[in-house]
Image (tube, rainbow, N blue to C red; front, side, top):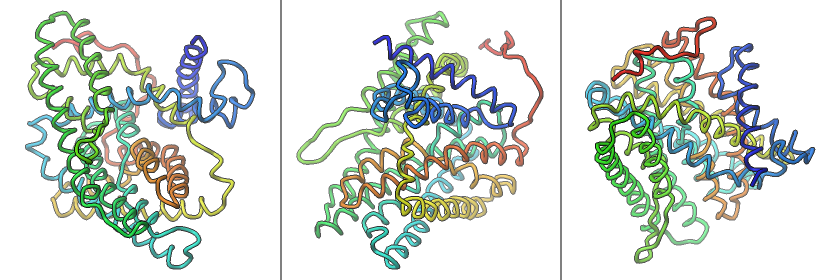
Length: 425
């Protein structure tokens, strides 16, 4: 048990020290945390087999996945804060249109490219795997985006729309993946399951939103029993952890698999809570400060879990590069087209596509499900390759896009202290 504590401490300290290097290079802290994870991972310092110094194997890194899940829950809970009714009234229709259109457009573009690759050389990629990868391409990582926004205190129409879109994107991506994976399995086995393609993904979205709404109402009611800031913050933290735990439950009812999306459940919890609680703004700020070390751990562990063995097979980087190119084109043009139709400002239309490139946990979860395909290992490795590239490059591109849009104003050295009036309700 002491080794776990030492590794956790080393991860946080290593991530923070690397962020100092990243600051000198004008790189986002997220990139620094991921690089720290690679250094502490099994392909670098982990190879030394020094007890407590990094992760000696990918399996050891995966043992800390519960921390990553908890961190993802808090990140999703914070994104829910962006879905305030006042904001939805001004740009809700734009967020929904952009969120749905760019995800579907990206899936179509990647599907066309990878299906063409399959017909050119079937040995590279099977048709079911090509269809599955197209759906996985729709997913965007909200965690990296949110961290960049918070680090540089980005604010403006692009930032506001971006946070709404990445939240909607995951719900759309979940439905697209479930439908595409069902079709992929039908191509392999010769039968199609309506339950798997239609009913289960819709149930997962509806039940996730329902559970999140219940937890948001419950949190608001429980908060009323406490009046001190510390106790309200503590009960909020406990509720998010409870919500994460409940969202990981899975069971069968009459042959139908019932599960929840952790991201959707926690985002809905944050959305409902922030819209009905009078003091939610202050409370979200305090919870966010408490969970900062957990967020650092999330990205360091994510970096340690990146499997560099994928470079041993030259076909994987080749397919991965095609996947990255066409996914990037799909995200960029899909978001630009939908922004144009919804009359978004030029600054938003021009830059939002770049900010939607990061991809991580959600895509990896989908890829893990796709392993059930006969060519599933290829899907997982291509996604691993793309995540490695996107997680290292994506935050940098997001930062530059927000700077170009005029929503990040870089300064020199700033004080880490929070003004007293900033915490007052």
